Image (cartoon, rainbow over all chains, first blue to last red; front, side, top):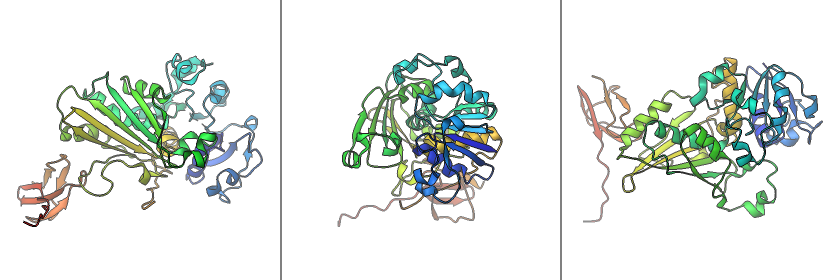
Length: 341
Length: 55
């Protein structure tokens, strides 16, 4: 299949290139970037130097493809989507522009009115663990945000099982610096960011809307930046209306994810990495989900770890692409990570 | 009966030529399990090494 990448010079674009250039069923025919037009992809992504003769082309030169991956900053695909959809191929939008079904949430969380609210209902939320069949048959996928992915995968099974007081759900998320993107600004300078444990969004983070949409409960989300390049760890605190034992949580999470190719239940009684840990997931498409019971507070702690650029962005997009194209879901996503790293 | 459940996480545990007293980890939760008997197959959490306080 011939695929194009729009906005290929950012970190997510680079990860898409890394995956798709080695995908056995894919030919990357075009990758666009206005800021790097005419330059080889290795200039933006040095890990990809000399693996492909591809040069960045201007957005305006985008041609048709069987599938187009859109990795532009939030707000840019909103206006262009009708044109992209009209080109005929499947579209996988990695921005937030079509993730929310309720157009009223865009002014609240993204500071702008959505120019094409009529298209929101046509976008499938690209979380295969929830919408696998819709993704198979859809031609327009909105790939979830990274913190949202981890939070939803940790939280949703508990909500479905009725183990959540819906008024008191707290998500505490930590993320690495690459989640801020390539143009993070002064806050991302090494001198400013190195060593921080920065509560960059104590309240009101944009992904709150996605998590609430998909988990079906009100969520209090706090996000921190920590000393890592890749990775998201979502720690979800819920208060159960009744006492719960860990065996029941094993049953609930097994029922939700027992046959999922990229979700592993991690809650081990021994070893160094007993609970989900983003560090060992770098470069992989796994989401490790774990849990613990706090009987003292009648609290359940659910944890989910991902690589924000993989299961939190490009890996999820390729997983959705595989489903849509009818390829085995894991094609091109088999990397098992590094240890030690 | 060659199957039983992990008493900690309820994962299916299969008896592949295990012998009574053998200790092995549960593949899901990592708990060290001890084979109580092989027919029917039964396991329990293996005793953990106790701290020696020098008494």
